[in-house]
Image (tube, rainbow, N blue to C red):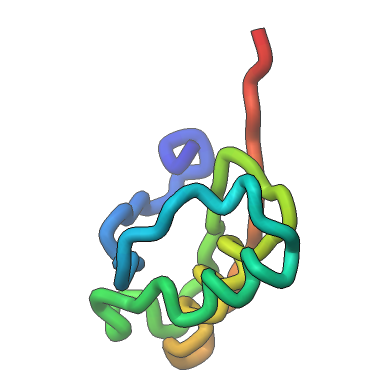
Length: 89
């Protein structure tokens, strides 16, 4: 996707702080509570003043995407866009 958008792809900006079991069987509040502070920035300087496209394969309740976006927004002057994509044969 980054190649087609002529964008830089970085996969190691967010780090998961703990291992969690699947959230698919939890309700929205439980997913949100489990996801809070679950991700941290590995290099805050590299994303300062950037526009970021955060892509996930599935967005069910939005708890994971929200947790990732919240962590990314800790960098100065960051704009976060969200996309989801799925392929069903």
